Figure 1 (cartoon, rainbow, N blue to C red):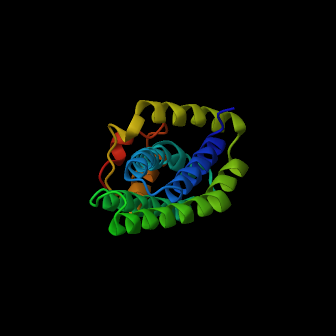
Figure 2 (spheres, helix red, strand yellow):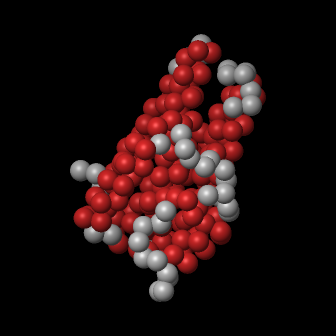
Length: 185
């Protein structure tokens, strides 16, 4: 079943395995291969959540604004770490520092999402909606392999929430939030 909350949890498990794989080698070629794949997964996952999951959480959650503000800030920290790692030779001490920064930000984000946003969403959203969103989430990830075509710039958390709330407020558009409206905040 393509429940978006389960798909997000599945991605989290993949992230944990990929970070652990980095710990298991010191071969630059292997590190490069693992990191390139992991970095793209992190970027795509964040963009998919921002396009599909968090706009819906803002409609249905118990404390959705705080959860979303925190998540967008976490995504920015993860993106910053991925970008920083890209500035250094793979396997070098500053590269490892950037990878650790990314891992720490991602671990914190996953824990908060798993403890707060995902249970909140499951409590407040019918399974049929979660499954529909899961299909959208999978399509988004398929449409953006290796993070191609994504705007990976940081987003202003308050600007993101404001843009989503403007779209879902009475008189605003009630359809799904297009990714184009969230670029480069």
